[in-house]
Image (cartoon, rainbow, N blue to C red; front, side, top):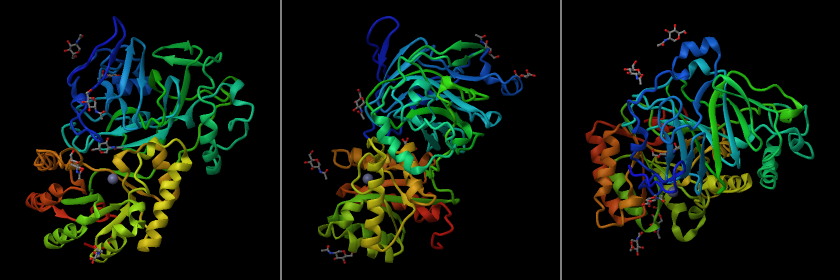
Length: 495
Ligand SMILES: *[C@@H]1O[C@H](CO)[C@@H](O)[C@H](O)[C@H]1NC(C)=O
Ligand SMILES: *[C@@H]1O[C@H](CO)[C@@H](O)[C@H](O)[C@H]1NC(C)=O
Ligand SMILES: *[C@@H]1O[C@H](CO)[C@@H](O)[C@H](O)[C@H]1NC(C)=O
Ligand SMILES: *[C@@H]1O[C@H](CO)[C@@H](O)[C@H](O)[C@H]1NC(C)=O
Ligand SMILES: *[C@@H]1O[C@H](CO)[C@@H](O)[C@H](O)[C@H]1NC(C)=O
Ligand SMILES: *[C@@H]1O[C@H](CO)[C@@H](O)[C@H](O)[C@H]1NC(C)=O
Ligand SMILES: [Zn+2]
């Protein structure tokens, strides 16, 4: 992995090159510090922490490549960062970019002792991003797919403490008696409100105190804090791998100063704008793999109408049922013939599921209203054109963080948000002089334990390989089925 060190002395502006246009399957960066141990780190002795209630200091950004626990921290998907001892500055341009700070790399880290505590982040700059807690895979092995296996995400701006002087004057936190659980309509209005109040507490005098390591220190002016109850992250706390920052819907820099876990939050006071914790918003179920033993599923997205009949023939011949993720606008367009085609696919027993209305990177949309439109309209088209609903949604480009998950959970009861663990990489290889790389990519991910695939029928080479892909999966002993079946959804049709 190359880093380009630019600038001088303490300031290193570096870019982590990754090859993927949408998704990066090589997680080499996760493993850079494998085996590195830092002695004397307070966070590592779980029982000690539990007894003394010291904060678990994850990262104070003293080092460019590893955190206070001795494990890797760094960026993915070409997120530019600038490190100086004591902080790291992120320069996001895309919601897929991320910055991870790891609890461990080749082990599953247990956060169980801290389950009732709070993730505390000290930062400067915009709050238009998500904070995620990432779960390791079943084997606790970063070389297996998927890695990380799943994440839960929260919207940073809901958890930011506001100084009193700015919290008054029409702010949504102005009502001191406000319930912990927020009203959804307020939430939507907040979205536009916040945009006009970016950086509203930058430069404000603060009296807040922060426990860095053992010392209580003043928070300097301009710094912001967020506290997230760990219970708001619905993942397996026995196998945590990292905290990450992602889902940026801003191009403004964010400077991280401290990431730690603390036993309590400051009590409401005038200094912190009577800060209180928001309630957990439902965020659906993110899935990257099938749960049924020996099952394998193809999730087929975005097709070209001229290849529909060919796809149907192949699936008939191979006698397999799949899940199609279909864009609403295409379904509505009579010239695509998709409405007729997918009705026939439904009759043949395939699953037809949601994939947004116009296929944007939904986490990049600025407002909740735009995200809602994409969801509501595609649900409407499904009802009109196919006469069905679906609780399965695949995010376009696999781009998903807190806001999309929350809005899906708001409009679709307990939705399945379907990513993947096998990528045929047709978006990368289908239309090149080496289309056979699609087979290699697929076989590689299957050999790494992936069992839920993504592919499209946009290019003849991909369609041409489909019978081989199916044979390969059958040959490996898997049974191919729809995604709802492979997830053991009780409302899925019987096998
Ligand atoms: C990331 O950066 C590398 C090298 O700078 C470049 O080759 C690659 O295309 C970039 N990827 C994306 C998604 O921008
Ligand atoms: C979706 O899956 C791809 C491939 O496994 C992965 O790179 C990406 O991080 C996943 N996104 C989420 C939100 O899990
Ligand atoms: C850190 O601890 C390990 C295991 O206890 C030991 O082998 C190693 O020498 C120690 N390193 C330092 C720098 O103290
Ligand atoms: C962790 O801390 C506890 C309590 O201080 C101590 O008894 C135990 O030996 C420590 N374990 C390790 C592995 O250092
Ligand atoms: C439209 O799709 C149906 C169902 O697959 C098919 O029978 C029909 O031939 C298609 N029409 C066109 C014009 O492709
Ligand atoms: C394949 O690539 C050629 C040349 O870059 C381009 O003209 C064509 O539109 C591409 N086809 C598809 C299906 O993407
Ligand atoms: Zn798509």
